Image 1 (cartoon, rainbow, N blue to C red):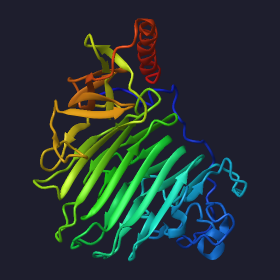
Image 2 (tube, rainbow, N blue to C red; image 1 turned 45 degrees about the vertical axis):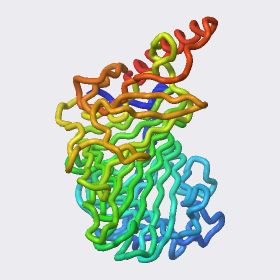
Image 3 (spheres, helix red, strand yellow; image 1 turned 180 degrees about the vertical axis):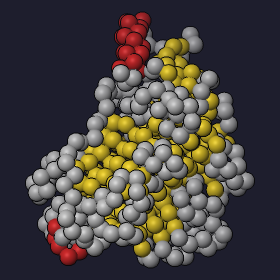
Image 4 (tube, one colour; image 1 turned 90 degrees about the vertical axis):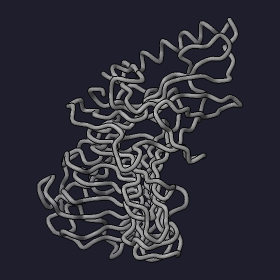
Amino acid sequence: MKIGIHTSRAFSGRAAITAAVLGFSAHIATAATYDSGGTPTNSWFVAENWNGNVLPVQGGPTSGSTHEINNGESFSGEGVLFDPVNDVNNTTGSNTYTLGGNTAEGTSANLRLYIANGTAAVSSKLTIKSGTLRMFDGGDNVVLGRSTNLSNIGAVTGVLVIDGGSFVVSNDNTDVGSTNTNGATTITSRGILDFRGGTFEGGLVSASSHGIRLASGAGSHGTFISRNDAPGSVTAFNYVSAQGAAGTGGAQTHGVSEFHYSNGGVNTVNVQNNLTLNNDGTAARRSYLNFVLDSAPEAKGDDGTFYIPEDIGLFNVDSDGNGTGNGATGAGNSLFYNLASDTALTAGSTVSASFGGYTYNWTIQYAGNIVGGLISASGGKDVVLIGLSSNAPIPEPTSIATLAIGALAIGRRRMARQA
């Protein structure tokens, strides 16, 4: 547990949500579907890229309606690009774009944003690079990759990349992989939430059951990727892996939490309430962990021959410090499985990753504690990796002073992100 929101360890400060007047439209529009009919074809702010040549109206549409980015051509590269600060096509007068807003924040309006939703295999992507895209009302949820009554037809794949901007889902879930059918024998939908920098906030207004849900439907795959490419923070009221039960037709339901170490750390996920890791007796329903080194980890010490990698915080549970959050609960054995080997990562199990020809090892703990930038193996509710060993040699004597300075910098960065 720690009080306050933690940001990327390599950077001080927190990417703030852009402040702007909402400026809702006085009328209510019908749901908008992206059709790539304008120039450039990937700009959110080109009206001709939406059906009817009209941008999605802020403050609308009415209850039960949907917006969809469902064009397979928009999947390559950045896909549909939301970049209001730098896009010359943005003539709205604001860098904040609010979908919903017909009712008071937190009151249900049931507006949905789908990225890839259909009865045929389709892949779509939305990239947020600046400004704020916001789902305002209660019931305004986001779905990345949702199959509609598909069976053995191939995956519907929806991808959301947050790369410097802010994405806020005030009062509902962000479902990463979803279905509305239970009898498929193969995976029918895949969702990917790829966080690289900026801000993600999910379900913080409702403070009930909302947040991030990986694989929310039977036979779906959902992957959350936390990178440390730029300053940023991820905060969800709840975080649920493998939300949907295993499919009755044999399709597997898998949630994957993937963390990338780079720039001297990882981007810890803040969970204000509950962390839920669902599994069953077979691989049909799994919560997987994938830990990736994009650079060599810094050292916290050595064993006389090789250096020991620093401790790492993955999930900061009860991040608001009010004492209500629960760590690592769920169906079956409430823990992660190793994505590569499908073996259970019980408390104390070894998690290994390689970079530059060397292998680094940690032990995983589900009752760790992260306070004031210090990470410990016990005493809290957090999921942490405790540095164990490596086959990376201790630096030469001329480099020891540099290593000591690096260790001091680690402590300073941890303290700075608490400020």
